[in-house]
Length: 207
Image (cartoon, rainbow, N blue to C red; front, side, top):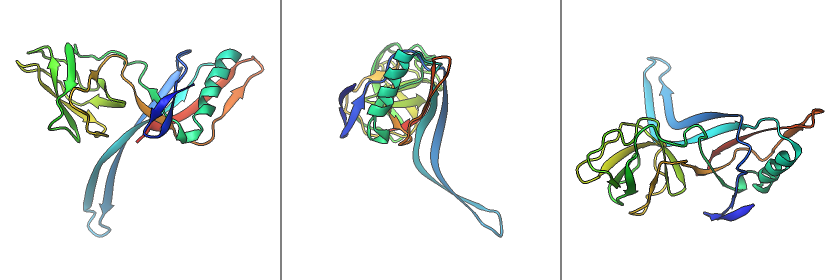
């Protein structure tokens, strides 16, 4: 079902059940490398860009569930549609995330957010690897995050910031998601004599 529009792309609601059987994640960085053929010396150019991608595998689906998922995939029309997607095993941060953190709106990016609104003087608000959602973007926190006496905290992120968020944008730590699209134009599903359907598809961040 189309629920809205983001950046000119139809936003399609992903079925809420059943959950995925397996998600294989990939993190890609854009880094150029040139090796001198005579000395072996390397030249490295970090373009400060990257994205998340994943291969999603569903459990064997009964007909009604399979029809719902196939309809979702076809309605996306390849990479032209977008959807919200997150890590089903990381719906809560490892840190305490005490308070209601929001972006400050200054000194942002490309690899960090300045935030406030947290409970003052707290350690371990976020731990390395915790996901956060800012707007419709999904990031991973890179360092241990603590708040100062004013509830301010700086969050280092990967991948680099997509858009500069407006001041007051919430830092979502519970069930964070980001904007994704299908990685391919062709979607496939397999039907078994056991009256089940197998579905697997590839996604990547919509950037």
